[in-house]
Image 1 (tube, rainbow, N blue to C red):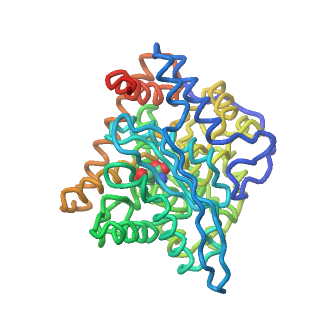
Image 2: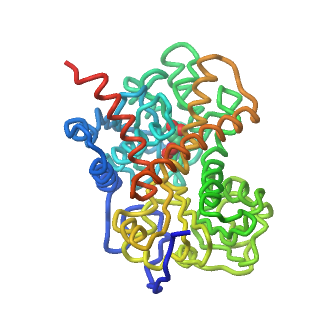
Length: 438
Ligand code: GLU
Protein backbone atom coordinates (compact mmCIF):
# COMPACT_ATOMS: atom_id res chain seq x y z
CA UNK A 1 0.00 0.00 0.00
CA UNK A 2 1.12 3.54 -0.62
CA UNK A 3 0.15 4.91 2.78
CA UNK A 4 2.47 5.99 5.49
CA UNK A 5 6.12 6.68 6.04
CA UNK A 6 7.86 6.59 9.42
CA UNK A 7 7.36 9.47 11.81
CA UNK A 8 8.99 11.17 14.73
CA UNK A 9 6.93 11.12 17.84
CA UNK A 10 5.94 14.51 19.13
CA UNK A 11 4.20 14.90 22.43
CA UNK A 12 0.94 16.76 22.46
CA UNK A 13 -1.51 18.05 25.03
CA UNK A 14 -4.11 15.93 26.69
CA UNK A 15 -7.12 15.73 24.38
CA UNK A 16 -9.60 14.29 26.78
CA UNK A 17 -11.24 17.66 27.38
CA UNK A 18 -14.74 17.63 25.95
CA UNK A 19 -14.07 20.83 24.06
CA UNK A 20 -13.87 20.12 20.36
CA UNK A 21 -12.37 23.41 19.32
CA UNK A 22 -9.63 24.58 21.66
CA UNK A 23 -6.96 21.94 21.38
CA UNK A 24 -3.38 23.22 21.29
CA UNK A 25 -2.50 26.42 19.46
CA UNK A 26 -4.72 25.82 16.47
CA UNK A 27 -8.30 26.66 17.35
CA UNK A 28 -10.39 26.20 14.24
CA UNK A 29 -14.14 26.36 14.12
CA UNK A 30 -16.16 23.72 12.28
CA UNK A 31 -17.26 26.50 9.92
CA UNK A 32 -13.67 27.44 9.05
CA UNK A 33 -12.81 23.79 8.42
CA UNK A 34 -15.95 23.20 6.37
CA UNK A 35 -15.34 26.30 4.21
CA UNK A 36 -11.70 25.38 3.68
CA UNK A 37 -12.71 21.88 2.59
CA UNK A 38 -15.33 23.32 0.21
CA UNK A 39 -12.76 25.64 -1.38
CA UNK A 40 -10.23 22.80 -1.62
CA UNK A 41 -12.68 20.54 -3.42
CA UNK A 42 -13.99 23.34 -5.68
CA UNK A 43 -10.39 23.90 -6.87
CA UNK A 44 -10.43 20.41 -8.37
CA UNK A 45 -13.62 20.94 -10.31
CA UNK A 46 -14.65 23.35 -13.00
CA UNK A 47 -17.61 24.66 -11.01
CA UNK A 48 -19.71 27.77 -11.37
CA UNK A 49 -18.10 30.08 -8.74
CA UNK A 50 -21.50 31.67 -8.07
CA UNK A 51 -22.86 28.34 -6.88
CA UNK A 52 -19.77 27.70 -4.74
CA UNK A 53 -20.21 31.15 -3.19
CA UNK A 54 -23.83 30.30 -2.33
CA UNK A 55 -22.67 27.07 -0.67
CA UNK A 56 -20.31 28.99 1.61
CA UNK A 57 -23.37 30.44 3.39
CA UNK A 58 -26.36 28.90 5.16
CA UNK A 59 -29.86 29.56 3.84
CA UNK A 60 -31.14 30.41 7.31
CA UNK A 61 -30.04 30.27 10.95
CA UNK A 62 -32.71 30.35 13.60
CA UNK A 63 -31.45 31.48 17.02
CA UNK A 64 -33.86 31.02 19.91
CA UNK A 65 -34.00 31.58 23.64
CA UNK A 66 -35.00 28.52 25.63
CA UNK A 67 -36.06 29.21 29.22
CA UNK A 68 -36.79 26.27 31.51
CA UNK A 69 -37.80 25.84 35.12
CA UNK A 70 -35.09 23.93 36.97
CA UNK A 71 -36.05 21.32 39.54
CA UNK A 72 -35.23 23.80 42.34
CA UNK A 73 -37.84 26.23 41.00
CA UNK A 74 -35.40 28.75 39.47
CA UNK A 75 -35.60 29.66 35.80
CA UNK A 76 -32.57 29.22 33.58
CA UNK A 77 -32.26 30.58 30.07
CA UNK A 78 -30.36 28.74 27.31
CA UNK A 79 -29.64 29.61 23.69
CA UNK A 80 -30.54 27.22 20.88
CA UNK A 81 -29.93 27.20 17.13
CA UNK A 82 -31.10 25.53 13.95
CA UNK A 83 -28.81 26.24 11.02
CA UNK A 84 -30.22 25.24 7.63
CA UNK A 85 -27.45 25.13 5.09
CA UNK A 86 -28.79 23.96 1.74
CA UNK A 87 -31.96 22.21 0.51
CA UNK A 88 -31.43 21.97 -3.22
CA UNK A 89 -31.69 18.15 -3.14
CA UNK A 90 -34.50 17.86 -0.57
CA UNK A 91 -35.60 18.81 2.95
CA UNK A 92 -32.93 19.92 5.41
CA UNK A 93 -31.58 17.04 7.50
CA UNK A 94 -29.22 16.84 10.46
CA UNK A 95 -28.77 16.34 14.16
CA UNK A 96 -29.40 18.34 17.30
CA UNK A 97 -26.49 18.64 19.68
CA UNK A 98 -26.66 19.45 23.40
CA UNK A 99 -23.17 20.56 24.39
CA UNK A 100 -21.69 23.61 26.17
CA UNK A 101 -19.60 24.52 23.08
CA UNK A 102 -22.55 24.75 20.68
CA UNK A 103 -22.44 28.05 18.77
CA UNK A 104 -24.10 29.52 15.71
CA UNK A 105 -20.95 29.00 13.62
CA UNK A 106 -20.49 25.42 14.78
CA UNK A 107 -24.06 24.63 13.72
CA UNK A 108 -23.46 26.24 10.30
CA UNK A 109 -20.23 24.28 9.76
CA UNK A 110 -21.78 21.00 10.87
CA UNK A 111 -24.84 21.78 8.72
CA UNK A 112 -22.56 22.16 5.69
CA UNK A 113 -21.09 18.74 6.42
CA UNK A 114 -24.62 17.32 6.47
CA UNK A 115 -25.29 18.76 2.99
CA UNK A 116 -22.18 17.00 1.65
CA UNK A 117 -22.92 13.81 3.65
CA UNK A 118 -26.44 13.47 2.23
CA UNK A 119 -25.12 14.11 -1.28
CA UNK A 120 -22.31 11.55 -0.88
CA UNK A 121 -24.96 8.99 0.03
CA UNK A 122 -27.23 10.28 -2.76
CA UNK A 123 -30.08 10.80 -0.28
CA UNK A 124 -32.85 13.25 -1.22
CA UNK A 125 -31.97 15.61 1.63
CA UNK A 126 -30.10 18.84 2.23
CA UNK A 127 -28.07 19.71 5.31
CA UNK A 128 -28.78 21.29 8.68
CA UNK A 129 -27.58 21.13 12.27
CA UNK A 130 -28.81 22.60 15.50
CA UNK A 131 -28.45 22.42 19.18
CA UNK A 132 -28.45 24.08 22.54
CA UNK A 133 -25.45 25.45 24.41
CA UNK A 134 -25.96 23.36 27.54
CA UNK A 135 -24.22 20.58 29.43
CA UNK A 136 -26.87 17.83 29.48
CA UNK A 137 -24.99 16.01 32.27
CA UNK A 138 -25.97 18.89 34.57
CA UNK A 139 -29.70 18.41 33.90
CA UNK A 140 -32.17 15.93 35.37
CA UNK A 141 -34.33 13.93 32.97
CA UNK A 142 -37.26 16.21 33.74
CA UNK A 143 -35.18 19.29 32.97
CA UNK A 144 -33.98 17.76 29.69
CA UNK A 145 -37.54 16.99 28.73
CA UNK A 146 -38.73 20.55 29.48
CA UNK A 147 -35.73 21.95 27.57
CA UNK A 148 -36.44 19.77 24.53
CA UNK A 149 -40.15 20.53 24.46
CA UNK A 150 -39.61 24.28 24.75
CA UNK A 151 -36.84 24.25 22.13
CA UNK A 152 -39.08 22.26 19.77
CA UNK A 153 -41.76 24.85 20.16
CA UNK A 154 -39.32 27.68 19.43
CA UNK A 155 -38.09 26.08 16.19
CA UNK A 156 -41.49 24.68 15.21
CA UNK A 157 -41.90 27.09 12.33
CA UNK A 158 -38.77 25.93 10.52
CA UNK A 159 -38.90 22.14 11.03
CA UNK A 160 -41.35 19.55 9.70
CA UNK A 161 -41.33 16.24 7.81
CA UNK A 162 -41.00 17.94 4.41
CA UNK A 163 -38.97 20.94 5.59
CA UNK A 164 -36.28 20.06 8.07
CA UNK A 165 -35.94 16.78 9.95
CA UNK A 166 -33.75 16.75 13.09
CA UNK A 167 -32.03 13.66 14.53
CA UNK A 168 -29.76 12.76 17.47
CA UNK A 169 -26.21 14.06 17.76
CA UNK A 170 -23.79 14.65 20.66
CA UNK A 171 -25.69 14.84 23.96
CA UNK A 172 -29.07 13.83 22.53
CA UNK A 173 -30.61 10.40 22.03
CA UNK A 174 -33.73 8.47 21.05
CA UNK A 175 -35.61 9.74 24.12
CA UNK A 176 -34.83 13.35 23.19
CA UNK A 177 -36.24 12.66 19.71
CA UNK A 178 -39.40 11.09 21.20
CA UNK A 179 -40.01 14.28 23.24
CA UNK A 180 -39.43 16.39 20.14
CA UNK A 181 -41.85 14.29 18.11
CA UNK A 182 -44.47 14.52 20.86
CA UNK A 183 -44.10 18.28 21.36
CA UNK A 184 -44.38 18.92 17.61
CA UNK A 185 -47.29 16.51 17.19
CA UNK A 186 -49.23 17.98 20.11
CA UNK A 187 -48.99 21.45 18.57
CA UNK A 188 -50.06 20.19 15.15
CA UNK A 189 -52.88 18.12 16.69
CA UNK A 190 -51.83 14.97 14.83
CA UNK A 191 -49.10 12.37 15.26
CA UNK A 192 -46.27 13.24 12.88
CA UNK A 193 -43.44 10.73 13.33
CA UNK A 194 -41.61 11.93 10.19
CA UNK A 195 -40.67 15.26 11.81
CA UNK A 196 -37.66 13.64 13.44
CA UNK A 197 -35.51 10.50 13.03
CA UNK A 198 -33.60 8.46 15.59
CA UNK A 199 -36.76 7.91 17.66
CA UNK A 200 -37.41 4.73 19.63
CA UNK A 201 -38.92 2.07 17.28
CA UNK A 202 -42.13 2.01 19.37
CA UNK A 203 -43.01 5.51 18.12
CA UNK A 204 -41.88 5.13 14.51
CA UNK A 205 -38.12 4.87 14.90
CA UNK A 206 -36.17 2.43 12.75
CA UNK A 207 -34.58 -0.78 13.84
CA UNK A 208 -30.81 -0.46 13.53
CA UNK A 209 -30.73 3.36 13.59
CA UNK A 210 -28.78 3.56 16.85
CA UNK A 211 -26.08 1.16 15.61
CA UNK A 212 -25.96 2.59 12.07
CA UNK A 213 -23.15 5.20 12.30
CA UNK A 214 -20.80 2.68 13.96
CA UNK A 215 -21.88 0.01 11.52
CA UNK A 216 -21.09 2.22 8.54
CA UNK A 217 -17.68 3.03 10.05
CA UNK A 218 -17.04 -0.72 10.17
CA UNK A 219 -18.30 -1.31 6.61
CA UNK A 220 -16.09 1.46 5.26
CA UNK A 221 -13.09 0.23 7.29
CA UNK A 222 -13.57 -3.24 5.81
CA UNK A 223 -13.79 -1.79 2.28
CA UNK A 224 -10.67 0.35 2.64
CA UNK A 225 -8.68 -2.51 4.16
CA UNK A 226 -9.72 -4.71 1.25
CA UNK A 227 -8.69 -1.94 -1.16
CA UNK A 228 -5.20 -1.83 0.34
CA UNK A 229 -4.93 -5.62 0.42
CA UNK A 230 -5.13 -5.95 4.20
CA UNK A 231 -7.16 -8.98 5.35
CA UNK A 232 -9.37 -7.90 8.27
CA UNK A 233 -8.30 -10.87 10.38
CA UNK A 234 -4.72 -9.58 10.23
CA UNK A 235 -5.66 -5.94 10.89
CA UNK A 236 -5.28 -4.08 14.18
CA UNK A 237 -7.65 -1.22 14.99
CA UNK A 238 -7.46 1.54 17.62
CA UNK A 239 -10.72 3.33 18.36
CA UNK A 240 -11.02 6.61 20.26
CA UNK A 241 -14.46 6.88 21.84
CA UNK A 242 -16.74 4.12 23.11
CA UNK A 243 -20.08 5.87 22.72
CA UNK A 244 -22.60 4.87 20.08
CA UNK A 245 -20.22 5.23 17.10
CA UNK A 246 -17.05 3.82 18.68
CA UNK A 247 -18.66 0.90 20.52
CA UNK A 248 -20.76 -0.24 17.57
CA UNK A 249 -17.81 0.02 15.19
CA UNK A 250 -15.68 -1.94 17.68
CA UNK A 251 -18.28 -4.70 18.05
CA UNK A 252 -18.82 -5.05 14.31
CA UNK A 253 -15.11 -5.08 13.46
CA UNK A 254 -14.46 -7.59 16.24
CA UNK A 255 -17.23 -9.78 14.80
CA UNK A 256 -15.49 -9.58 11.41
CA UNK A 257 -12.28 -10.82 13.08
CA UNK A 258 -10.31 -7.56 13.13
CA UNK A 259 -8.18 -7.17 16.25
CA UNK A 260 -9.40 -4.14 18.24
CA UNK A 261 -6.31 -3.21 20.28
CA UNK A 262 -7.53 0.01 21.93
CA UNK A 263 -10.82 1.62 22.94
CA UNK A 264 -11.33 4.71 25.07
CA UNK A 265 -13.69 7.08 26.77
CA UNK A 266 -13.25 10.46 28.39
CA UNK A 267 -11.21 8.93 31.25
CA UNK A 268 -8.56 7.25 29.08
CA UNK A 269 -7.96 4.19 26.94
CA UNK A 270 -7.78 0.44 27.38
CA UNK A 271 -4.88 -1.05 25.42
CA UNK A 272 -4.11 -4.67 24.63
CA UNK A 273 -1.80 -5.40 21.69
CA UNK A 274 -3.23 -8.95 21.52
CA UNK A 275 -6.76 -7.65 20.98
CA UNK A 276 -9.54 -6.68 23.38
CA UNK A 277 -12.60 -8.84 23.95
CA UNK A 278 -14.86 -5.86 23.26
CA UNK A 279 -18.04 -7.81 23.98
CA UNK A 280 -17.01 -7.91 27.64
CA UNK A 281 -16.66 -4.13 27.96
CA UNK A 282 -20.02 -2.45 28.64
CA UNK A 283 -21.03 0.29 26.22
CA UNK A 284 -21.57 3.85 27.42
CA UNK A 285 -25.31 3.19 27.62
CA UNK A 286 -24.84 0.10 29.78
CA UNK A 287 -22.25 1.61 32.11
CA UNK A 288 -21.15 5.19 31.34
CA UNK A 289 -17.43 5.94 31.15
CA UNK A 290 -16.39 2.49 32.35
CA UNK A 291 -13.67 1.58 29.82
CA UNK A 292 -10.68 2.19 32.08
CA UNK A 293 -12.32 0.28 34.95
CA UNK A 294 -12.16 -2.90 32.83
CA UNK A 295 -8.60 -2.32 31.58
CA UNK A 296 -5.39 -4.07 32.63
CA UNK A 297 -3.32 -1.51 30.73
CA UNK A 298 -4.52 2.08 30.65
CA UNK A 299 -3.04 4.67 28.27
CA UNK A 300 -4.12 8.24 27.56
CA UNK A 301 -6.34 9.32 24.69
CA UNK A 302 -3.30 11.07 23.19
CA UNK A 303 -1.27 7.88 23.31
CA UNK A 304 -4.12 6.00 21.63
CA UNK A 305 -3.98 8.36 18.64
CA UNK A 306 -0.28 7.59 18.24
CA UNK A 307 -0.50 3.79 18.54
CA UNK A 308 1.16 1.59 15.96
CA UNK A 309 -2.13 0.11 14.72
CA UNK A 310 -3.15 -0.54 11.10
CA UNK A 311 -6.30 1.55 11.38
CA UNK A 312 -7.06 4.49 13.68
CA UNK A 313 -10.72 5.43 14.18
CA UNK A 314 -11.22 8.73 16.03
CA UNK A 315 -14.88 8.37 17.03
CA UNK A 316 -15.25 10.74 19.97
CA UNK A 317 -15.03 14.49 19.41
CA UNK A 318 -13.80 17.00 16.85
CA UNK A 319 -10.29 18.39 16.27
CA UNK A 320 -8.32 15.65 18.05
CA UNK A 321 -5.72 15.28 15.25
CA UNK A 322 -4.11 18.61 14.53
CA UNK A 323 -0.83 20.33 13.67
CA UNK A 324 0.67 19.21 16.97
CA UNK A 325 0.13 15.46 16.76
CA UNK A 326 -0.56 14.62 13.09
CA UNK A 327 3.13 13.80 12.62
CA UNK A 328 2.93 11.27 15.42
CA UNK A 329 -0.01 9.30 14.01
CA UNK A 330 1.47 5.88 13.24
CA UNK A 331 -1.57 4.24 11.63
CA UNK A 332 -1.44 4.24 7.82
CA UNK A 333 -5.26 4.45 7.65
CA UNK A 334 -7.50 6.86 9.57
CA UNK A 335 -11.27 6.37 9.37
CA UNK A 336 -13.16 9.37 10.77
CA UNK A 337 -15.94 8.11 13.05
CA UNK A 338 -16.61 11.47 14.74
CA UNK A 339 -17.58 14.56 12.78
CA UNK A 340 -14.46 16.65 12.07
CA UNK A 341 -11.82 14.82 14.16
CA UNK A 342 -8.95 16.11 11.94
CA UNK A 343 -8.23 19.84 11.59
CA UNK A 344 -7.27 21.36 8.23
CA UNK A 345 -3.60 21.55 9.18
CA UNK A 346 -3.70 18.04 10.61
CA UNK A 347 -5.21 16.88 7.34
CA UNK A 348 -2.42 18.50 5.29
CA UNK A 349 0.23 16.80 7.42
CA UNK A 350 -1.45 13.40 7.12
CA UNK A 351 -1.81 13.89 3.35
CA UNK A 352 1.90 14.80 3.01
CA UNK A 353 2.71 11.59 4.85
CA UNK A 354 0.41 9.54 2.58
CA UNK A 355 -1.83 8.51 5.44
CA UNK A 356 -5.18 7.46 3.95
CA UNK A 357 -7.87 9.52 5.71
CA UNK A 358 -11.40 8.30 5.01
CA UNK A 359 -13.66 11.25 5.79
CA UNK A 360 -16.53 11.46 8.25
CA UNK A 361 -19.06 12.37 5.58
CA UNK A 362 -18.66 8.88 4.17
CA UNK A 363 -17.60 6.83 7.18
CA UNK A 364 -20.30 7.75 9.69
CA UNK A 365 -23.01 8.41 7.07
CA UNK A 366 -24.80 5.22 8.10
CA UNK A 367 -26.61 7.34 10.69
CA UNK A 368 -28.30 9.66 8.26
CA UNK A 369 -28.80 6.83 5.77
CA UNK A 370 -30.85 4.83 8.26
CA UNK A 371 -32.53 8.13 9.20
CA UNK A 372 -33.66 8.25 5.58
CA UNK A 373 -34.96 4.67 5.88
CA UNK A 374 -36.78 5.73 9.06
CA UNK A 375 -38.35 8.72 7.30
CA UNK A 376 -39.54 6.45 4.49
CA UNK A 377 -41.01 4.02 7.03
CA UNK A 378 -42.80 6.90 8.79
CA UNK A 379 -44.26 8.27 5.57
CA UNK A 380 -45.41 4.82 4.48
CA UNK A 381 -46.54 3.80 7.98
CA UNK A 382 -44.75 0.49 7.48
CA UNK A 383 -41.71 -0.66 9.44
CA UNK A 384 -38.76 -2.61 8.09
CA UNK A 385 -37.05 -5.56 9.76
CA UNK A 386 -33.54 -5.15 11.15
CA UNK A 387 -32.28 -7.49 8.44
CA UNK A 388 -33.72 -5.29 5.71
CA UNK A 389 -32.28 -2.13 7.29
CA UNK A 390 -28.81 -3.66 7.56
CA UNK A 391 -28.92 -5.11 4.06
CA UNK A 392 -29.98 -1.83 2.48
CA UNK A 393 -27.43 0.08 4.56
CA UNK A 394 -24.68 -2.17 3.27
CA UNK A 395 -25.84 -1.64 -0.33
CA UNK A 396 -25.93 2.17 0.08
CA UNK A 397 -22.54 2.32 1.81
CA UNK A 398 -20.82 0.21 -0.81
CA UNK A 399 -22.37 2.19 -3.64
CA UNK A 400 -21.07 5.44 -2.13
CA UNK A 401 -17.69 3.83 -1.48
CA UNK A 402 -17.39 2.71 -5.11
CA UNK A 403 -18.18 6.18 -6.47
CA UNK A 404 -15.49 7.65 -4.22
CA UNK A 405 -12.98 4.92 -5.00
CA UNK A 406 -13.46 5.50 -8.75
CA UNK A 407 -12.91 9.24 -8.29
CA UNK A 408 -9.86 8.58 -6.11
CA UNK A 409 -8.39 6.38 -8.82
CA UNK A 410 -9.24 8.71 -11.72
CA UNK A 411 -7.77 11.85 -10.16
CA UNK A 412 -4.64 12.47 -8.16
CA UNK A 413 -6.49 13.49 -4.99
CA UNK A 414 -6.88 12.45 -1.35
CA UNK A 415 -9.78 10.33 -0.15
CA UNK A 416 -11.33 13.43 1.38
CA UNK A 417 -11.04 15.37 -1.86
CA UNK A 418 -12.49 12.45 -3.81
CA UNK A 419 -15.45 12.33 -1.42
CA UNK A 420 -16.03 16.07 -1.71
CA UNK A 421 -15.78 15.91 -5.49
CA UNK A 422 -18.55 13.27 -5.57
CA UNK A 423 -20.76 15.28 -3.19
CA UNK A 424 -20.15 18.69 -4.66
CA UNK A 425 -20.67 17.58 -8.25
CA UNK A 426 -24.16 16.36 -7.35
CA UNK A 427 -25.08 19.48 -5.37
CA UNK A 428 -23.78 21.93 -7.94
CA UNK A 429 -25.53 20.06 -10.77
CA UNK A 430 -28.79 20.32 -8.80
CA UNK A 431 -28.26 24.05 -8.26
CA UNK A 432 -27.51 24.60 -11.93
CA UNK A 433 -30.58 22.64 -12.91
CA UNK A 434 -32.90 24.52 -10.56
CA UNK A 435 -31.31 27.95 -11.11
CA UNK A 436 -31.48 30.97 -8.83
CA UNK A 437 -34.89 32.25 -7.78
CA UNK A 438 -36.30 34.80 -8.67
N1 GLU B 1 -26.18 13.58 13.70
C1 GLU B 1 -25.92 12.55 12.76
C2 GLU B 1 -24.83 12.95 11.79
O1 GLU B 1 -24.00 13.78 12.10
C3 GLU B 1 -27.18 12.05 12.07
C4 GLU B 1 -27.96 13.05 11.32
C5 GLU B 1 -29.31 12.51 10.84
O2 GLU B 1 -29.57 11.33 10.98
O3 GLU B 1 -30.08 13.32 10.35
O4 GLU B 1 -24.71 12.41 10.73
